Image (cartoon, rainbow, N blue to C red; front, side, top):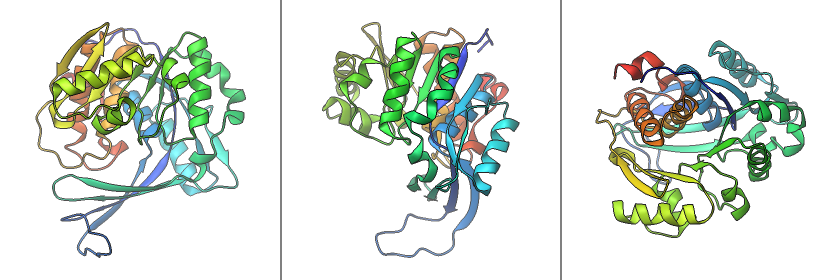
Length: 306
């Protein structure tokens, strides 16, 4: 993908420290599995997407709230090293930084439990000083690891400022009609798309039906990610299936976040929706060949030659 002049990307979302154990298989309820390998990585869906966008050449600012602790200080330092604008990152003196406990098995499947900490305290009242960041951005990228009222607040402001709001609706939650009507693009996976649309997805035809239902709720464009099958793109009343890039997966933890970060970068460069999804699929494919969340995000030159 030839690099073009970029718009500004603002990511609003979560920042966590991921504590990961890689083991042979995921434990059953009440079971202890021995023999795992432990490591820590910076994570959180918002932070993952911000880092992925920055590594792929995006002009990125990030709004999040971390604890006033070692995890929060380390996160901010890492964001700065990635070239992300950290001017709007908030520090919470009452709540700890978010933490995610992740188990990854030898098939690259994972199980995740998140203690949200300061992420759950990122409130609309915190964002009065960040209105300028919203106004200066061209693309807003959000997820659902922060309070829904904050997501709705930012989406409404951005929509009224005629910005393109992209929502990655994960973890799956009920979305209000008002929020959906403020979105330029939504990027659910199959489970999330089923929850939003009420359509059970079993094949490409049912995925297309779900996308049309979601669009009918007021979202301008819909991308349903289909895992190893790629992504269904519904835009301008047309549907296209973009196949995934086949690789041998090691860890799928942040694949969706990398996809969304890459998608935002490609759209910020004026690429078509289909081109942006192809770029996102390539970036995500590279990420699953590596262990970790932010650490798995590829750099631009890697995707361009992939």
